[in-house]
Image 1 (spheres, rainbow, N blue to C red):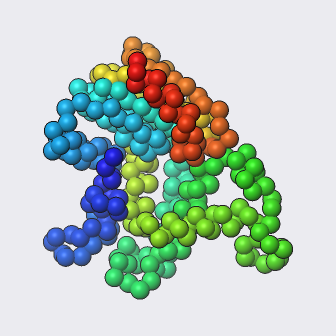
Image 2 (image 1 turned 90 degrees about the vertical axis):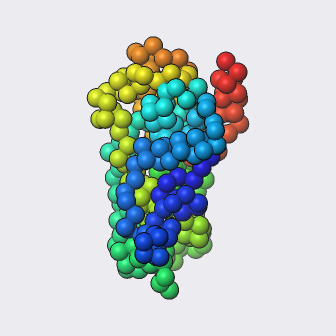
Amino acid sequence: CSNMLGGCKGTTGPSSINPETGKQYALDFPVVTIEDIVNVQKKLIDYLGIKKIIVAGGSMGGMQAIEWSIKYPDIVKSTILIATSARLNAQGIAFNAVARNAILTDVNFNNGNYYDKEKTPDSGLSIARMIGHITYLCEEAMYNKFGREFKTTPSFDFGIDFQVESYLAHQGKVFVDRFDANSYLYITKAVDYYDPIKEHGSLEEAFKNTNSRFLVISFSTDWLFTTEQSKQMVNALVKMNKDVSFVELESKCGHDAFLLEFEKQTKIIKSFLRG
């Protein structure tokens, strides 16, 4: 697995040094798409001399796997799509927009040029992560995990009272320590833009020239990438006479299930790969 273009853990992104200026790219870095990310991955496997691959991904990784199967049909043997869709729905785009605005309006964002500053947009990035993390959960998961439990005796002010508030604050804090705010902007925008349906005219046409076998896995409580969206891909593949298997897994974890329900997924993926 390679780090994605626009990220902050290896592959070039906004926190990388621009050789023309000797400083970080920041917002001078071009907006990238899922297609761009896959093209960079293709250059990597060409460099490594790999001729055939199995692509697998969950969530945004699933979008990359979709694009691999569409753009490089002669290379991809099997495609495994987990808790993903061919395009993000309006609700998902809306959550990403709010998260980006939390970063963009942070007093320390400085138009993306914060790398050499004492203060960085930690507050905005933390809030963005909190928003994103809510989309990974479902109401049942949040109730089972937190209910309406208080962290301490109610303070009757605007501090952290509830366990769920404490949990989200913690998730935001630890995320700031390991991620770059500009990368968050670029990566979420890439997810928003991806739309092979619009590019090809229909989902059927998008999958028309694919040669791989497909496995599509969804989760019952995932409201960010729903089972209905998975079925849309499955139906399009069936209409185009493609080899496709589909399973919806029962889970109480929401979208987070693709990261947590690994034992269930392992059994299904092993069976698929043996086929």
